[in-house]
Length: 350
Image (cartoon, one colour):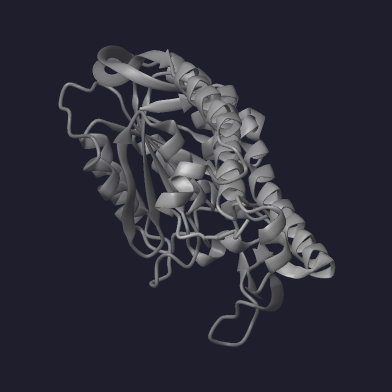
C-alpha cells in the first residue's frame, strides 16, 4: 500500500515531453545549419569525434533525473505494517432506486443525481460504520458488499444510472429482500437500510417485504426524493430532451413522490420517513438516528505505519545528474574504436 504526500507535484512531469520536443527542434535546426556550412563530410573532418548518440544519452539522463526529483518532491510513502484494528459501528445498506422515474427533474438536477449526492454526503459523515450499496428497479442487484472502504463506496455510487437494469419498475420488495442478505452477522444488533426512492411502487409487495425485514431485525429508513405534485420523465439523447415518457394512451406520465407508501414501509420496521429534498435535514436525521443505536465491534485491517521513500528518489536523481555531467558529448577515443553504438568511423590521413 502506498500514498503520496504531495501528488500535485506529479503535474510537473508534463515538462518532460516538452523537453524532448525542444531537443528534437534544436537538432533539426542544427542539421539545417550544418548543411549550409558544407554538410556532414566537412563536419566529420572538423570534428572527428562528434557523437550522434551521446547528446541523446545525456538528455535521457537529465529526463530521468528530473522524473526522480519530481517523484521525490511528491514524497511517496509505502505502508509497512498491516494491523487489525477494532472499530465500533453500524452496518448500513443504501438501496438506491434507479428506475426511469428517477430521471424526473422536479428536484435539480434529477431525482437520481440528488439521491447519489445524499448517499455521498451521508458517507462523508460516517466514521467507523460499514456500508453496502444496492441498485434496484424492477429487480434488485448488489453493487457493493458491506465494507469500510468509503472511497470504493463512492466510486460505485457514481456508476449508478437508469440504464444499468433493462427491466423497469420500482420493486421495493426486491431491494428489501436483497438487503437482508447483506447482514450475515447474527450478533449485529442494529441492521439498517436506507431506502432512497420516489416511492412509486405500484404493487403492495413493498409492505409485505417490510414485514419480512422487521422480522429479520432490520430497520428501514426511507428517504423520499421528488415532489408530491410530480414531474414528467424526460427522455434524453446526448443530454438533450427529445420527448417525455407516455402511457399506453399516449398521455405524458407525471411521476409523483409517494410519501404515504414510504412512511408505511419505514414504520413497519420501526424506522422513519425523511424528506430527501433537503440535504442538511437528511444529514441531521441520519446523525440523530445513528447516535441512538448500539454500536457493534468488528475487526478491520489497515496500514498504520508508512515510511517516507523520497530519499531513494532524490539519491537516484543525484546519480543521474552526476552521470550526465560525466558523460561527454563527444565520442570517447577508446570507445570509438569499439564502435559500441554503431556510429560512423572517420579516418584521417593526416
